[in-house]
Image (tube, rainbow, N blue to C red; front, side, top):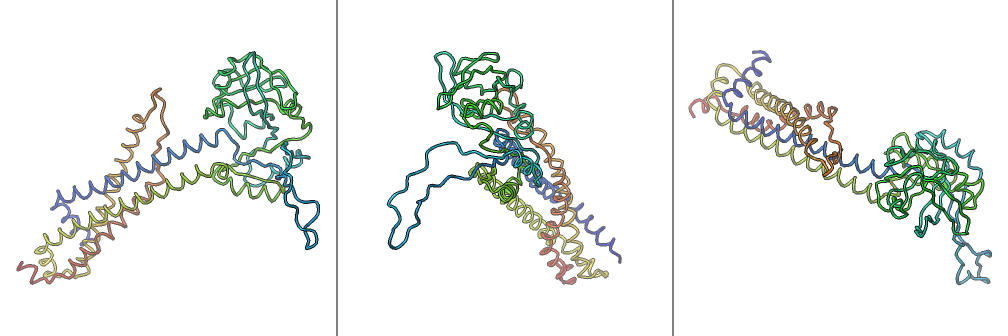
Length: 407
C-alpha cells in the first residue's frame, strides 16, 4: 500500500459523511472569513485614523532645547541653594544657523522631506471680528512634501507668496471672510501686516480650523520678531511608522529636541496598539473554535467508521496508515475551509465597502482585502486542521480490528 491509499480513504470517508463534512468546512470558512473581515476593518479604521492624525501635522518636529532657569551660584554647605528661582520669561525659542541643519536633516536616513517653520501666536482681525490664531510661516514648496495641504483645500487656490495666507474654514466663518478677502494679522508686540486669503483649508479638526493661518516664511519671521531664525524644522518620514526612529537619529544629529507624531499623539498610538492586541485575541479565539469544531467532527467520524477501520486493519492496513488517514482528513478540511473562507471574506469586504458610508455617501474608511494574508491563512488553516485531527487519528490507530468489526 502506498501513500495514495491514505489519501483515497480519507476522501472516501469525507464523501460518505457529506453533511458532516459540509458543516465543518462551512464552520471553518465562516471563521476564516471573519478573520479576513476583522483584518480589513482594523486596517481600514487604523489607516483612516493615522491619515487624519498625520495628515495635518509633520511626522517629526525638530525644536530648540527648552530654556531652564538655574541659580547663578551652585549650592554649597556655606551657601545653600536659593529658596526659589525665577522662571524664564515667556518667549519664542528659535533655531540659529538653520539652513545647515536643514541640509543635514534632509540627508538623514529615513527622512523624506524637511521644511523650515516660524510659528507663534497672533491675532487675526477683520472688521469688528478678532480671533486668536497660530501663524505658521514656511516655504510652501518644501512644506507640501511634509504635510499634504493640497488635500485639504476646500475653496480657493493653493498659493503662498509674501502677501498671501491660507486659513482654516472655521476661522473664515468667524471672520466672515472668503478667498480674495483681506485681513490683518497682529502679533503680541503690536507688529501687524495685511494678508489676502488665497484658500480655505479643512484640517480635520475644528480647533485647528479655527486657529490655523499659513503665511510665507519671511513675513512670519518679521511678525514674530525673529528675523533670520525659525522656531522648528518639520520633517516628513519615508515610513511614518518609523517616525520615532527618525526622531532619535535627528536628536543625535542636531543636538536639539525631536518629537515624533507618536509622542505627540501618545494616546492615539496606545489606542491603536490596544486595537491590534484585541484583534489578535479575536483571531486566536476564532482559530480555537475552528480547531475544536474540526476535532469534534473527526472524533464522531472515528466512532461512526469503527467497522470500516476494523475491516481495513484486517486486510492489512497498519495503525500508522489509519492515523495518517485522519490526519489527511483534517488537512483537507482545513484547506477547503480556508479556501472557501477566503472567498467568503472577499465577499464580506466587497459588500461592506458599499454599506459603510457616511450620510454624504462617502466611505467611512477604506476596506481592502489583504491578499498577502491569503497564503498565510491557507497554510495556518491546513496546519490547524492537522493539529485538530491528532486525537481522532490516535483513537483510530488504537482500535482493535476484531473488536471494531464485532461492534
